[in-house]
Image (tube, rainbow, N blue to C red; front, side, top):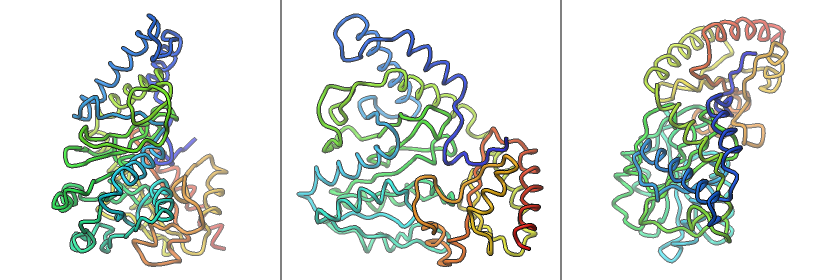
Length: 372
């Protein structure tokens, strides 16, 4: 199998599975229970939380465990909006976000909130001057993805944060889902940040929201004791422990992995340049893990299924998107044809050079057959 869809989800690291199984078998108590088994489970969660906090250089009390980034994004956006709506009802985002950002924003618009989209330049980078124009004393939240999930564009978070700091009533939320484990991240200039385990070789069903300790939220889920007052539900002992293991493992060789994946990305781009109707949408401001291309004249799902016959797996858009057009590609290129004919190839430190060569060989065959 040649798996090239790591940005959709990653295979679970065997060490992470081992941790999950061991904890599931050994720690059977409800972490909220007062008896010995509950205390043991609760202590393990505290130890895992301490490890995550140290890895991200944050405080333990600033971690809210969720089911994944979609819940984290919803909790951050709805939580801030509903808690601080007395300050204002204006929110700013971009045209490069995940559907779990647009979903809660659409919901809030029905409640009377105003949402503006900041302009981005021809590289896909936020236009700082336009952000300055949009920010007002009524703005309570700016939500930006650190790394775009379809093209891989990296936003200048520190520069954005410096502008937002001029408005003390405004919070800065960053969707870090595609950034963790791929590039170095720093949360000191961020108020809230979303993460998910299944993007870093962890198990599906666990994620977290980082929230600075002095910020409050209206909870998305009410009722019942948990690790925090901002998210009710029985704490997921084994998932939390496995999340900590996944994070520790993926951050261990960050620089080495980045260089290795960059080399693979360059080989892939070099091999695709020879096709007249193939356009590379990802640019030099993108992480090497993602390469987005448009194949003019071939439908994305057609090439996807053609490659699938050779046991090669890619993506047409981000896995959670809807519709036939890539909003991110259109936002970048302003070209509807490119936006409706794009595919995403996503790489990993697990990808081998022979995977790239095999993909290019079979892509050439499929391209020629489908172009007839």
